Length: 112
Image (cartoon, rainbow, N blue to C red):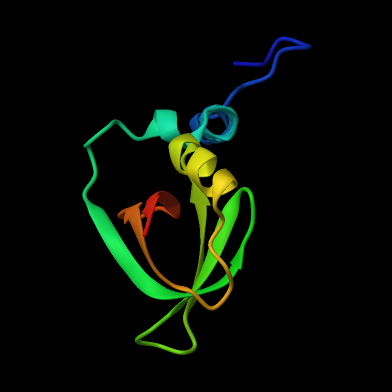
């Protein structure tokens, strides 16, 4: 059967590729615009601790060198509550701290 002039056939592969691309783009836009505290439901993820020495502490993040592995340095961003507390009394470089964070993220929920 001859094709009508000006019409195109859409193959299932092309249709899948375009819908997959649109879904990925939508997911990136949603996760980029939603703050990390809204993505995590309160109490939904277990918390872990990271012990070490402060390398650098800024108004938005803290870098801590592990006390167990001298080659491991992690940077954590603060939750809004921790950010307010850190703003009043920031930790000094060289101080030993324990950072409580959600497992699988770099979001500090408490800095001792």
